[in-house]
Image (cartoon, helix red, strand yellow):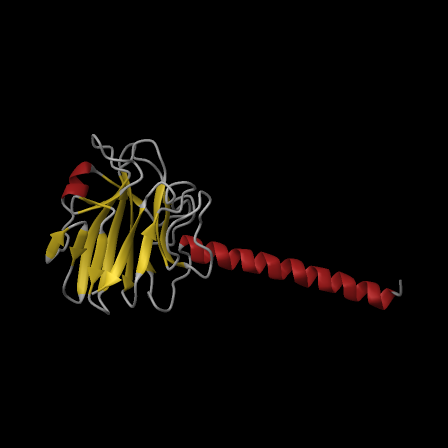
Length: 208
């Protein structure tokens, strides 16, 4: 093989590997919250990673700190739907509650399990997301992908909008991550851990 052709093949191979690595990094970043999206204007405290912020991003809350979080109250709450009003809303989302009769594959907001959350168009929403499970990892990802979800569902780059990453189970405290976004359309909040969304750990966010 001529040397020039061989050199070009080597260069092409290197470029191909670099492109693949770059795409993987982009997919990872979108799926686990390192980058924000234009329509959600995602905001984070420290940049979480897929294992719950190994490089920072989440913190442990004590029981008293968890109880002291001030949140917005829904204007109406009925039939599994919480409707909020106002241009700025703060809600507490508990993941994996261990209460009697409660599935670990659950998000709980204002004592509702996996509720549909309704906000006016353009509302700025802050979610304080807390893993209260004692033995399982959970996370919260906003996605445009609709259910049903496969066992290995992980929001792909084109579907993932913003994420807490995956938070560890409670031990000396409750792992917590805060995300903020602007509601500009309907979407779903899901747990990205394999099998959790398939088991029902998801809910819808609607404009209304």
